Amino acid sequence: MAVRRFVCLALMLGAALCAQGQPTNDIDLADSAWPIYHANTRATASSSTLGPGTAESAQTVRSLTKRRWRKPLVSPWTVMAAPYPDGTQAVFTTPNDGIAKYAIIDGQLEAVDFLPLDRKFFDFDWGILLLNNGWGVATEQKRDRFVLFGDVHSGPRSPIEIKGEIVVDRARHGSLSAHFSVTPDGHLITLTGANKLLAIDIAARQIVATMDLPAQSGTPFHNSFPIDERGRLYLSTQQQMTAVDWTGSEFRLAWSAAYDMRGPGCEDVPEDRRPRDEFIAVARGKTCTGSGTTPTIIGDTESGIVVIVDGHAPKNHLVAFWRDEPPADWTALPDPNRPGETLDRRVAGVFPLPLSSPEGAGFTAENSPAALGNATIVAQWAGFKPKRQSPRGVQRVDWLPGARRFELIWANPDVHFNGVPTIACARPENCQAYGMGRYGSRYAYTSLSFDTGVETGRIDLGRSDQVLDQGNNHAVAADGSIVYSGRHVMVRIE
Image (cartoon, rainbow, N blue to C red):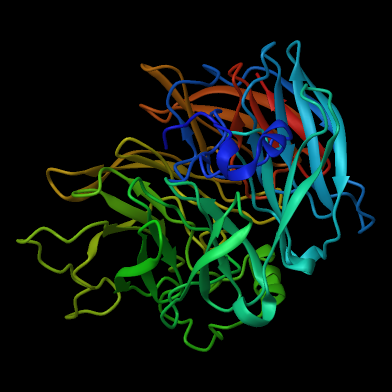
């Protein structure tokens, strides 16, 4: 998404409001490599111009979370603000009880401030994004509101405060979820527990359009949704992928394609399982959880695809759907689980991943595929607390537009990435995939060559699980370092 300059609309909002930094309709994401979870609205978890060449050293900073629930926990998602004029950069994360601000100053990560919020643990208030006016957006599901937050005064060591709120009427629209993003025209889009999409004018702090999704087209707990350059949203559930267009004033159903994300043997698992029960099943590595992964957008609107990893056993599949209409000569693919039957014609490809298995020591699909160009990187999830002998495996699978099929480029069976992989490039010809994992009694951070899958760097992170990520991807800073939130500390990789 191109970043537009923040312009105060004095005629609309008044000069006084402009002086206070009031949001306007000229809204976009902050001008950084990682202003939203999954890096961008396409959910590619990649930065094509920044990043360390290899993983070489690590720094840890104690978490600012103050929650008194067992031990402090840090949220999965870490986002980056646009650099300040002096080159320093703020880092934000949203743990269970509020919003934490850190800053990269003189090459070091510093803890800055913590803004408490009223949250319940199983509400999963993990979503966070940063806007181009310096404000951020997070949720407080207990009160069904979006919280707008920002610096008290501009600067890396400034404390943060609540700038405003956007309240969602639960009785009319359902409970708020942690899944939200921004359209190309600057509207905040969110999915509620009533299976409803809401479009919100951030400046006016008003809901301007709603849409009741078709049965089984959206699930508010498990996965977020990407938005492409024309404003098309892609939502997954256990039984289908659905595309919805945002026109600037209303939602329109674009298409819906059937696909069994959970796979055979899951017929007895309730599709409406409570979020808490679903969360526990995921944490324990049970099969038949969720709706696959957050989808990832690849290519252009006419010939591009949207991909997801399903939850099938014994192997997960990388599954592609045509973003626009399938090619006129496209023939429906055979269903790998039902001999003699075919898949929905919109399914563009189904590829069994060699190193992503939910059975045995493995877990069902949770790691969203990272993408750079037509290439995807998929890693093996091992739960919120991986065992000593965690399942390993990272693989690169490319989409070949001319051949209309997937191709395995490499598969590394020796590396464990426990979260969504991060892709970044020190130079165009030197791209890497990054992630942390467990190796026996110790944790390590590893970088792999994007081209070959060969390990290029590894940092020993010690024995303490304080450095363990929670299934997240890792945010790339302006100085080329990577920051992620562990269970009890923030970790910066150089």
